[in-house]
Length: 150
Image 1 (cartoon, rainbow, N blue to C red):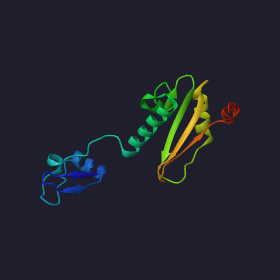
Image 2 (cartoon, rainbow, N blue to C red):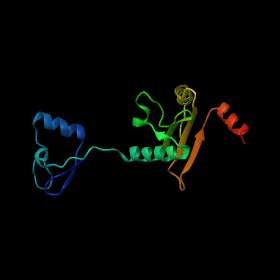
Image 3 (cartoon, rainbow, N blue to C red):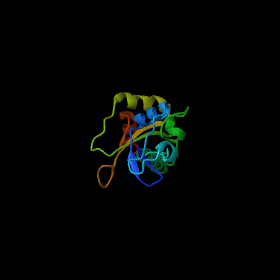
Image 4 (cartoon, helix red, strand yellow):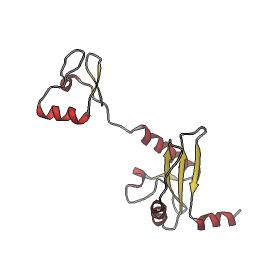
């Protein structure tokens, strides 16, 4: 982590070493001015990472597309799934900056179980390419229903 001293100099420190030195009372000083960083340092603010922000934006876009809403805490509570159109669709959203994505059968089966009467849909967005590419994975029975309604 980086700590900015009151003199404006930024010092890169290992978080574990920094906290260990702090708890043992050993000073951690600025390399430029020699000030004690425990007293003068500006610590990084805790907040959402870039990945969390991108994931949240993906969920909002998916909710708009299906006419649903984003599930609070991304399904960590009693209602599972990232996006839900109640009575119709339950969606799990994943994104990657890589050119590949590993999807396990267990993830798909879990989504299908939790959908309970709603259409289980798994969306993968590849953000490492331009333009971004989006793919949807669904059970075969749901795809068959989709084809029959065409």
